Image (tube, rainbow, N blue to C red; front, side):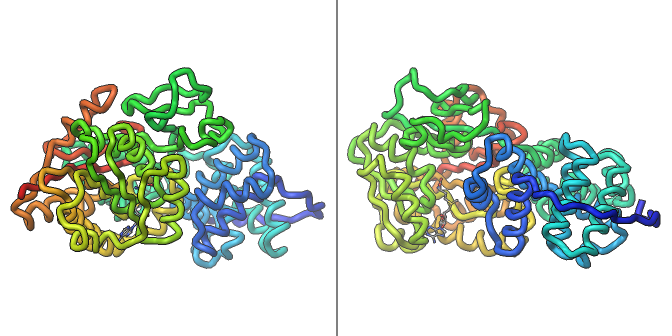
Length: 469
Ligand SMILES: C[S@@+](CC[C@H](N)C(=O)[O-])C[C@H]1O[C@@H](n2cnc3c(N)ncnc32)[C@H](O)[C@@H]1O
């Protein structure tokens, strides 16, 4: 495949405008690479800037997210079709090629359109020499379908983890971390399913904040399987078309995040006057749900966040729940400053986010094993602080949106070892009371690990802890 020497000629072309969806996707890919932008923030902004129709917005989203997720695999295809090391290809050209390969191998775009549109984009964005290169590489790519390329790319990889990493476009260290976590539950055989799920678009789920919404509301959605407050937006599209979403009483929130908040708020009946703390609250998704639950039960919530800009987002998220005290501070200090103060604490710890790869398509390429080391040190400190701030007999939920064992069980077990007066509660029993349907939670710990492939949620980890005097 790499030895195609057929000459190609570039006839005279008239530059057409680039289709807006492709232009938006291309600009977001460049912003992700050059400015370290987050696609989930940059894309909606670009879609608004270009005033894309909902069809074009859908196409731009598929192009951006699909290309970013599958980048590792596509780079192997491109290196082969170009017979060149990927590092020698200019970034503009490389991103045009990645988008082209995505259209050829994973979208229902006609071959000629995928190639022509990419060449057209190159005419606008790249050097003259690059235009012929894009044309040639994509034509070579188009001679084989996805299955052929998968076989070709993996044929010489004998290590099973490396093979899956190449095939499902994940860094190999992430494949190994996910495998370890599944194996710890006795479910190692689910790895391939999980990796495939990471490459799919998550459905949009909404939460109805309790205490605000009546049953016959205007939001068209189906109840989610597990969260009693969740709705799936099967029709897709922009949820802000619903007035209730614009008002903030219905919000976009992953079903796993809803369950994590509810396992804490519904662990036992609320006694009026209880004090609750959300220690790492930004941007405020779970704080909003906790605040609504606290308001109904007569508890008082304090939401803390260390980054001032993110604390502002929490204030915005809680605008319709004005009784919450939002403070900016380092969670690590709260334990010493306010010992034995809170009846319930949510520690939704900063983490690698390896459980939300579906939503953050570039994240897998940005994280490194070093991040795990830095984050676990912070997680342990925050948990120590949260345990100090917890009243004896109180309940603390330690939550991550990562299933990495170093960030989940290892942190909890470290805290249990260090603190004789701390014990773990049965989060699974609480979950089974909260959830609308039985959930398949595997392994024999007391904590809960959710999974995209098994539950359709982000891979949230939830452990409940308590302390005695
Ligand atoms: C996983 S996010 C929390 C998500 C949030 N619970 C939600 O549902 O929207 C972790 C948050 O912790 C914040 N954070 C990081 N280090 C912190 C610290 N030392 N003290 C308090 N917050 C911290 C981060 O800025 C980030 O906003």
